[in-house]
Each structure stands twice: as C-alpha cells, then as structure tokens.
Image (cartoon, rainbow, N blue to C red; front, side):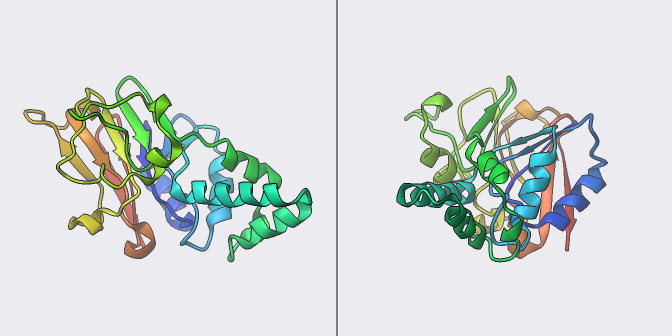
Length: 226
C-alpha cells in the first residue's frame, strides 16, 4: 500500500501511532509532502526517523526550505563548520541536539515534487497555465512548489488526468473540518485515485491534534488524534 501525508510538524508520537493504525510494513510506501519540522517539539527526532525509512519518499515543504535558506546563509558567512552546526541546532529549540551533518545533508537533498503515472505530490501547489493545465514541474522554482498561495482554493481544479496531493494550508483554514479534503471529478465515484482532481492533506496537526494519511490503492483516509 502507498500512504500519503503532509505537515506532520514534529508530532513524532502521532506519526508513529498513525503508522501503527494502518499497519505500515516494509512492503508499504510512505510519501510525505513536506513540513515534517517545526511547531511540534520533536522536529529532528521525526526527521531522523523519516530519513531512516528506506520505503519513504520525502519532499521539502516551506519549513524545510526556510531551514535550508538559513543554513546556506550561514555557510556564506563562515568556514567554521562547528559554529554552523551549533547555530543549526539552536534552530530547533526542543531537540536540536539530535541534529548532525548527515541529517543536514538529507534535508538539502530533499526533492520538491514526486510524480507517477497516476498522481503528483507537492507541498503547496503546482504551476498552472491560464487554462488550468499543469505546467512541467521540472521548470518550476522551489518557491512556487513550497509557498503557492492559490492552489488550495476549492475552485482551482487542475486539468490533468493525474491527481495532485498537497498540504501547506490546514483544511480548517478554508472552513472545512480538520480532515483530508478530496475534490472528486464530475461523474466519478472515488474508487480510484485518478477520480480526484486534487487531495488536500494538511489537517492542521499542530493545533488540531489530528494527523491523517490517504491510501492510494483503496482511496481511504486514516486518522489519529491526541
């Protein structure tokens, strides 16, 4: 099975409980659409756990991108790597002492999108032309993919046979429940992932206390809460 989620924001315990709920195994695949860090108290702990999972596809969100911009700015100012690491650890006030250079390198290597024949995963949104068709993602800037402010809107439905999974903005901020919001294509029943225009994954975990994931194969959503 393939499970997709987003915006875990350091809630490591909730994440582990969600894996237990779906019975996640080495035969399954996990895709995280960014923002694994900040807000919650276990950003580095969660990141290192995700980095250790061989069957996980991890994308950068705006919080990872902001961290990397801070890292790159430090590297331009000094060649003292020990000082840089100390400052990077201070970036995470609760568990920054767990950060090492291997984790920093993993953050820097995170891709900004993931695409299959049936779906696209991204943090905030995909670039669209004037008619709503998805533009080539390889030509999109990281800023477009992690900061997009428009794709979340309910009336923006990409014209593509592929479903787009994204997070970034809690669904509750759009007036919905703190759950995964799916946008079904007209005339479709929702039994296949391509029956959906897009699926909004951000349940606002940090303040709602709810974390969810979507299973691609059976189109079911699973949740755990504090």
